[in-house]
Length: 256
Ligand SMILES: NC(=O)c1ccc[n+]([C@@H]2O[C@H](COP(=O)([O-])OP(=O)(O)OC[C@H]3O[C@@H](n4cnc5c(N)ncnc54)[C@H](O)[C@@H]3O)[C@@H](O)[C@H]2O)c1
Image: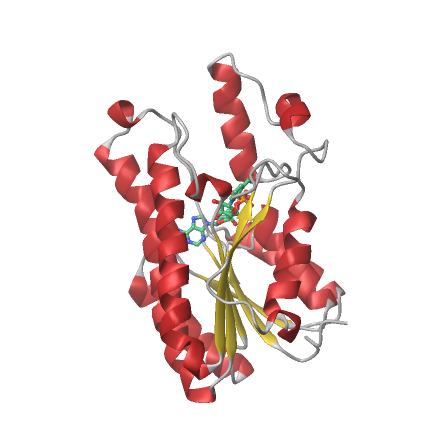
């Protein structure tokens, strides 16, 4: 349906959670996959799921916060597959603390992975896409990149930055027929990050994601497959006239 048969997709942070669901769904749509992740065991499990869907998968163990590693891995993926049609920047981390209590190290770590990581992967892949005058880039931002939340300052700021990068790059490469969009997930469960956030909520005596479900207009928390469905659309030519957008996938939790 989406015309993705035979395309090559590179997904960062596909070892678990949302990234894994995106990789598996892209494979079911006919894409071969390159995975950039630091979690070797998880990435191998995702690769096995991709291969079970009948597609090729190459895991490139990569810390996206390190440009040299990203460069080496994307060069390797270009050797293996010959081209990259879709870059999906999904790797991310979270640190939960008020700004006054956030350590300098935690603040920088969040930016190194969530912002530098997106920049590094785009810097490595965009010239290749420009040469081919074709490509799709999708970034996982968050609805936390559209409004601030107490206790999430570093994370929110990093996701605002992802949306800023998305919009700027979209303007730069539109004439090269490259689409750049972001997905802004809401409350997505069954991911490592969500587990971490829930643990912190419990520690602070606050409600977990599932306990807050009633606040979501759609009446349920999200699951990684909810994001994967939007990801395949944005990866396809069905979304050809969309660029520079930050799409909420929140069950109505956030509407701006
Ligand atoms: N779960 C949610 O509710 C939610 C909501 C909004 C946005 N997001 C975003 O979705 C994305 C995926 O998160 P998730 O919820 O699936 O959590 P997750 O922790 O399951 O997935 C994060 C992935 O990124 C990888 N990763 C972490 N640091 C890395 C690094 N330096 N280099 C390469 N890979 C690295 C991890 O190994 C993992 O595979 C993140 O960008 C997150 O900010 C999640």
